[in-house]
Image 1: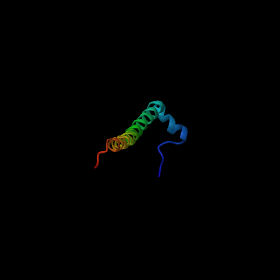
Image 2: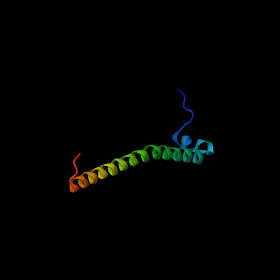
Image 3: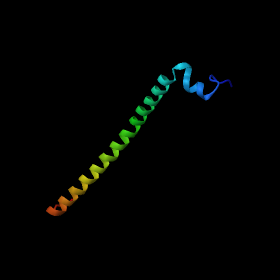
Image 4: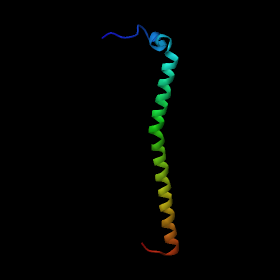
Length: 68
């Protein structure tokens, strides 16, 4: 197996285009991670809100004496 680059410094430099290439890679990874993490956090928040709403409804029914 033959490597394209002779050393790690050549890999990072990428023939003078390293800054552009690696900054694009970093931005892409940040966006992908955000697209994965944000919905997970939102899901957790929504479940918490639903739980609180159900608990309030249960207390309201108990206070008014409603059955069901």
